[in-house]
Image 1 (cartoon, rainbow, N blue to C red):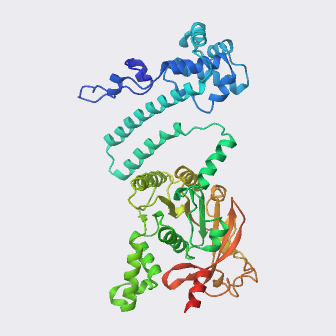
Image 2 (cartoon, rainbow, N blue to C red):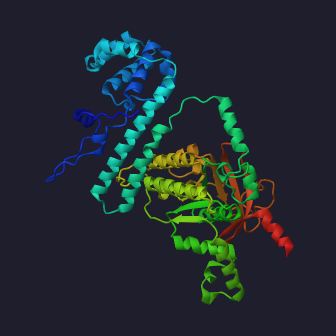
Image 3 (spheres, rainbow, N blue to C red):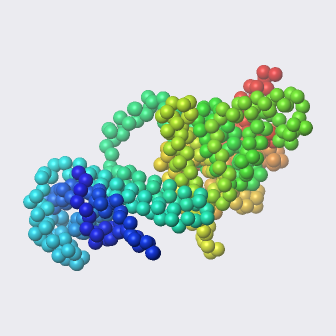
Length: 500
């Protein structure tokens, strides 16, 4: 039930919905004032009455409601007093709540003992209190949506020069409303097992891992990168982080038909296109120009362009990308692709987000000179993990390794080498290092080649899975083709050689 009575002006002002004054202009009539804010007075009273009648009711509602979900200021104060009592482990009833309200100086404001007794006596039934709470939450979410639209309007009225930043702020504000609808209490295992059975038998791409295209790595990761996982790919500069990420993007988009979003802060979009064409065609970057390649290479380039044109790879090469922009654009693309998938136009859902690289992302629009970079990187890694969980899409984040690795005799990367912050290691579900052992004399350091005997060969690199939250860790060999800046599955490459 939505109240049809106008909300008193003083209550509107208290909740921040009063019309803002405009200099030299009459104040506009706000439609929210005419219609009344979404609210259900009876549901609010029923929730509080149930709690005051049976204090165990609060335990089942604490994970659903917060004081701000009540529109009536009296109800907010009462629920706040109840929460304070529960936090201390005190009994909850009309007497103790009245005492707490007295301490807070709010007893007379809520109507004293008469109103507390009214809530109990007028309670329709204590059964179904969770249903009443969900009504209160739904009305609160609608009010949050109204407030968000007002805030978005203010963003537009300020008319910043950077419209992209304004759009990112607007989308962030709108998506924040969804937070209230995502509050959860404990879930029963048997219910979750039913969801698991449904997912296990579903053919939707959203419940399948996104494969990297490297068979040993996919096997180690139990099929590929899982939805909601933050996968960190780290190496020293010039080792091939971007090349491996593009190889994974190509494999996911072409072989599995999933959409891939690439946030390339370091490399321009046209450079990414050139790398993809070179890797797909087998024609070195230096020979991509028409005057530099022969007829056979021209045919290979044409075939590569034809193949890549069917790949759903979306590239954002904005420099100075902020965390809010990255989050807003990921959400927007994900929603757009979901709509396309529902319209059955042949497009796939978003299956992978690549960020190249973490150290070039700004956590905030403006960072002071004395900002703590470690804290900023912590915010970035934590938010990337939140994006992965929210969208149910794996995020592959590239990261630099510190120079400390160059000072050691043993050049094998370690988790402690992750640059700027240990939170990257903490937030990541999977951490993969690229170790170009072929660069070091004798294949690196001794016979530690994972038992394969390949990593000391020229053109063979080792992928070290140093952290795997869902399974075991191991070392994997891949083939590095520097002429076309491409990584290949080692065993597939060997099989192709045998064919010729």
